[in-house]
Each structure stands twice: as C-alpha cells, then as structure tokens.
Length: 253
Image 1 (cartoon, rainbow, N blue to C red):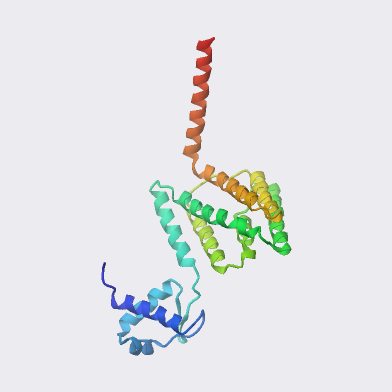
Image 2 (tube, rainbow, N blue to C red):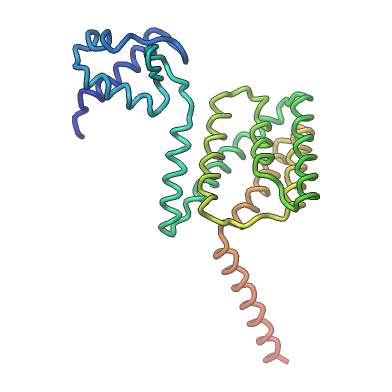
C-alpha cells in the first residue's frame, strides 16, 4: 500500500480536528497559518489538503473570510456514481441497470418500515403526488421525473433519516445524469400511476408485505425497460416453444 502524502495526512488530521472539536457545517476552522503551525506543515501541503477536502464538501473556503466546515452534502458521491455508470454504459455495460438494482434493494428493504406508522399528513402528500402524476399523464402522456422523484423521497419522510434522504436523492441524481446518454424507454403512464397508487394504499393499510410487493412490482417494470434484450430473448424463447409445441401436435395428429 502506498504511503500517504503529506497533504493526505493533513486531510485526515483536519477531519479529526472537526470531529474532536465537535464542529458542524458553517463553523469556522483555524486559518491556513494556524493549520501550518498546528500540523508543522508547509503552506503548499495545507492548501492541497484544503482543496481536496473542499472538492468533497468537507470544508468551504470563502475568499477573504476564511475556511469553514463544508455542507457535507453527498453531491460528490452522486457525481461519482453518475460518472462511473455513464462510463460503463458507454462501454456497453449495464451501468444504469446496476444503479437501479442498488436503489431497488434500498427501497424494498425500507418500505415496510414506513408502514409501521406513517403520519396522515405524509399520506396526504403522497396521494397528492399520485394525483399530480395522473394529471401529467392525462395532459402530456407522461409522468414527470421530478414528480416521480418527489414521491419516492416523500415516501420515507416519516423515517426522519436525513442520511437516507440524501442517499436516495444521490441515486436519483446519478440515474438522471446517466439517462441523458441512454434512452431506457418510458413506461405506460397509466401503469406508473397505478403502481404508485398501490404503494400508497399498502402504506396506508399498514401492510408491510403488500408494500414490499408493490415496490418490487414497480421496479420490475423499470428493470424490464432496462433489459430489453433479456425480455426479447424470453419472448423469442416462448415463441419458439409455442412453435415447437404446435409442430409436435401436428405430428401427433
């Protein structure tokens, strides 16, 4: 394993400083000169470390004001996911499908927890979003991605887990970026609306098993659109089997 550079070591120590001092987003950090003294390091190494941490939102450098703890958002994570998936997709690999499968595992594993006690106001929001989907489908023949995204984020609001919300949003952002390069087809909007309606009703009925089934059905539709070859192959196989059976019956007769 390669030995960490001086700048990488300073990155680690700045993170430890943030944790040790219990600092949060927006809190001021020591000045560049103070960090140099604190870590017995040169200006170049400190600046390199700060720039690297700024790139991943751990610190924020405000010219003329100083250095502060950053937003700690997952946008760099989403960007990394999107770039990786886009590269794999352009090489003929299932980059978008892989993203979808990870998101499916996350959502199907969590949706039953929502049924344990979703507030009435959250149900109202979800039903309102389904109504918006239905209006969009009727007017434009397609459910807007923003509405679909809002539904899935609102679905888990009652869990009060900010990290979960950020991770799910990161997956949506990454998938949207990859979709710019890929035409994955579009599901029948009436099917999209009915699937989301079933998810809401399962949650409202506090039926965890039903909610999981509804979510899996929803992702089955997405998967079928992202695996056109697999679907067409299975159709071809079914047709071949039908032909073979017909030929066999003809011979028998």
